[in-house]
Amino acid sequence: MTLKLGVPSKGRLMEKTFEWFGARGVTLSRTGSEREYAGAVDGVEGMQLVLLSAGEIPRELAAGRIHLGVTGTDLIQEKLSQWDQRVEPLAELGFGHADLIIAVPACWVDVDTLDDLDAAAAAFRARHGFRMRIATKYHRLVREFLRDNGVADYQLVDSQGATEGTVANLTAEAVADITSTGETLRANHLKILSDGMVLQSQATLFRARRAELSDAERATLKALIETLGIGD
Amino acid sequence: MTLTRAMARAEAARLRDAFAAAGAHPVETPILQPAATLLDLYGEDIRARAYVTQDPLRGEQMLRPDFTVPVVQMHMEGGAEPARYTYAGEVFRRQEDDPERASEYLQVGFEIFDRADPAGAEAEVFARISDLVQPLGLRAATGDIGVLTAALQGLETSDRRRAALMRHIWRPRRFRALMERFAGKAPVPPARAALLAAEDPMAGCAPLIGLRGPDEIASRIDALREDAETPPLSAAQVQLIDAILSVRETLPNALEHLRDIAVDLAALQPSVDRIEARAEALANRGVDVESLDFEASYGRTSMEYYDGFVFGFYAPARPDLPPVASGGRYDALTRRLGGGRAIPAVGGVIRPGLVLEMGGAA
Image (cartoon, rainbow over all chains, first blue to last red; front, side, top):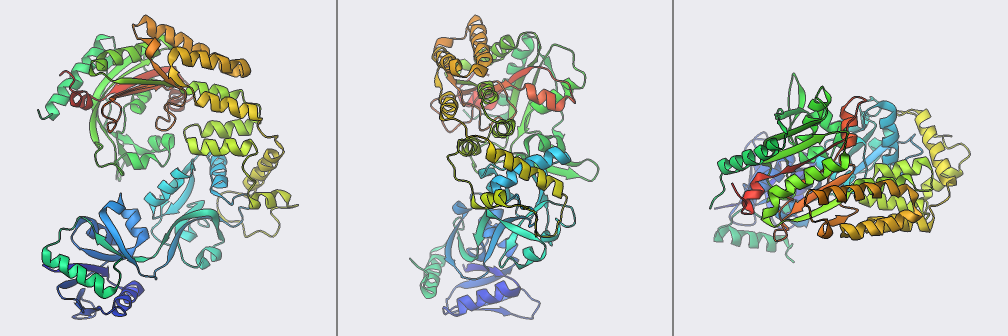
């Protein structure tokens, strides 16, 4: 009955998303108390705002429980296999820029490329008896990237936070993480491999390809796209 | 007619009985396998292909992605010699890219552990599987990973370069890139050039952090210096490897072609002799070797533990289907899992579900 738009439920990502829609004539707002995750859409009839954790938006889009959603390209590609068949990017929102990169200790003067990383991993495994550890929370993206680039003899270790600290703490030899300015990496004595860019991500408005639309919802989607001025 | 689970199970039993009639001992393996062994063998890529689960006592476990590894482990822990085994049961494969591919299916296998007659054992595994699936009108593909490894051993270059190429046999793109670099065709990256030119590469570098120590960094720099002084692979040698990798014709023609190449690359000869002995053994078992395809680069992308003879049976009219049967030699796997011991081993599997889908007998 209503076209459901999923938006990150807190923080800068939510504020920026509200601003982006507001600047294009669609007002998103939270309703009720500060702590209640309910929202409203003004400017286009027949829409409902659903506030969700940014990490859950890919899943909800894939399942068709929301028709539209704002989240990072990194989360979409990490969480959805064959993502391009499940969601369609409608507009890049120009904020939330983040690069998923591979970084190694800056003191590794002999390692500048993935080719070097592969050779260092082979020697590391022979010396230490286990595969070189790369700490990340983006397992699928990193694994596919390293496979496509022919890097072997590594293992991924899960790190859900403070990933840059894992090398100094001896729980990993390298990291694959999101960075925007590289400041945290430098502070932790890490450097980015020259060809170690896994993905460049930003906040993006996605449409669920598999969500069924009634005629009324289809008309609402058309009106929204026109109001936002993102039609092609 | 709808194919049911019971029909697939009955077909699996029929195929297993056929192997048992050939003297194979029926064995079972647990469905839950310790993840560490498989991760150590296959690396991180196995996580994309196998289901991983865990419990607090045993830690990470995988749903059996194949039988070969547990059967080899079982044999190396005290199997009689020689031995032959058969099994039938489910394997589980995680699918990330192709929703049409099954994530759970039956496999029936036949494995021979025998030191006496390697070519004969290879011919027997191929012929028995061929007899069972050939009524379906499949195309057989064969190859031999041993050809490429023999050629690399004969390459006139440093041990390090040979080892680097050997390590990436199963990653054709990386292999190609290494060949180009070793042949001096790829430019030296600027960072590498600067590193090699530096008097003291470690001077003024960032604080040392992590487990990889300064000695390891220094020894890699030494290796890079040695590599920089290694003369490039000659164009003739690169051409020989290219010629080997492009061999794709009927077995007799492929043999002829490889013999010609072996004139310029003597290290190739033992692997050519081996193919010849196998061709003879196959003919003795009634296989039509005159029209059998042989492709030197077959099996380089998907079968990391095979290190010699490799084969697969494909449905020509159904390119969407995976091979109905496949197998090969895996001597190195027995060494990896055997704790210092090793035994020549060859085997193959049939997918009864696909046999039925192709209209095969049940």
